[in-house]
Length: 244
Image 1 (spheres, rainbow, N blue to C red):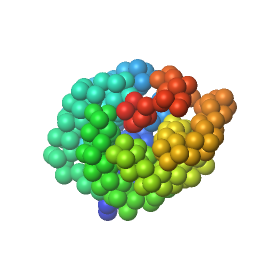
Image 2: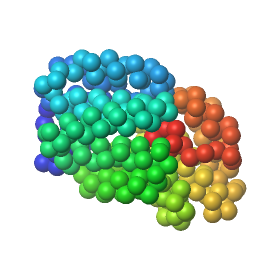
Image 3: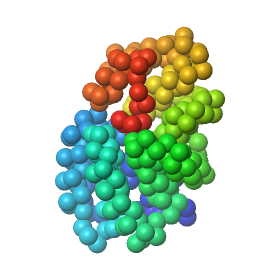
Image 4: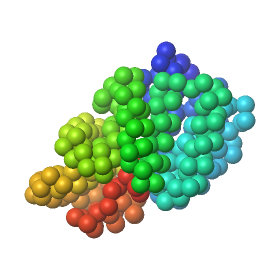
């Protein structure tokens, strides 16, 4: 597998977060929790995938650990997720990960900080990760958009409403036509709705939520907890905390 000059996992268009195997791996690609609605199934599949990873593949094991940490976050197991992330970070240091690899790890650290309610720390981690991903992959790449969406929600929680509104509007614009990751599109729209409501644009916020409900009606598969959050609008809490 080709390794880019920026130190990406698989070049500018793919990464192990999208289900690709690291170079030299003989195991099957790890499941991708970005597109798995059932977090329990995702966790079980990722635990199995991690067990199959040889100890001689630190980069592959680190990627599997990060995917598992993401699934654990979505299951609300924040402490366990942070532990798996710490294991992954140790392996990343051993192989001197850089570029997109390091940025994706830092983005996950930002997810954990958001889940802990430490939005200032989350903003710092996500801002650096987003900058690296923009430079390596471009503003419209799904990995970049995931970082931007989480960064926008952190900014919103810190009261930086106008900054968050502009960022989340861009994420929705770029993510909606992709249909690569319906979860990303829905989360971005819900975050944008919260930002619009925070600025007093209630009608626009309600219209955005109606778009989300229309997506669901068309068969977009979402985790049950996220569906429940949609039903609680406008009392909905930040989606970041539940589904990074």
